[in-house]
Image 1 (cartoon, rainbow, N blue to C red):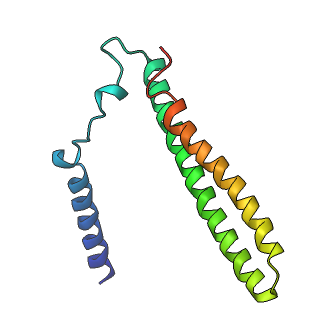
Image 2: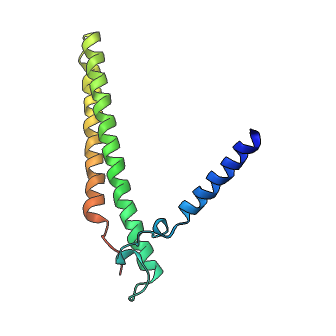
Image 3: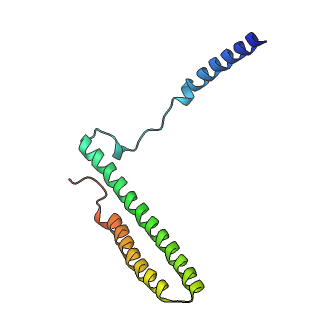
Length: 121
């Protein structure tokens, strides 16, 4: 019985290897012409384009994360000030949240308009 299980395992392994090495699965997608060398583009141009793209998306992600975090902190401060009955706690966190949201919007603006779309040619 154990030999039969080992043979079935070997056959399944062989079928799996044949399946993943089939020609239809080996056809990988090709990158766009902006992300390939040639046609007068050097490695610095392609790398710079990809770097700036990543920098833009990184600015967007950090800005959105900061805005969401600020909103949750202000909401928590509102609940705590409501429970304690004092408004000063909420106002301190609201002012801090407004400053942080303005910095986050500035970061999103930086990612949108200041960072170039391509390389620095």
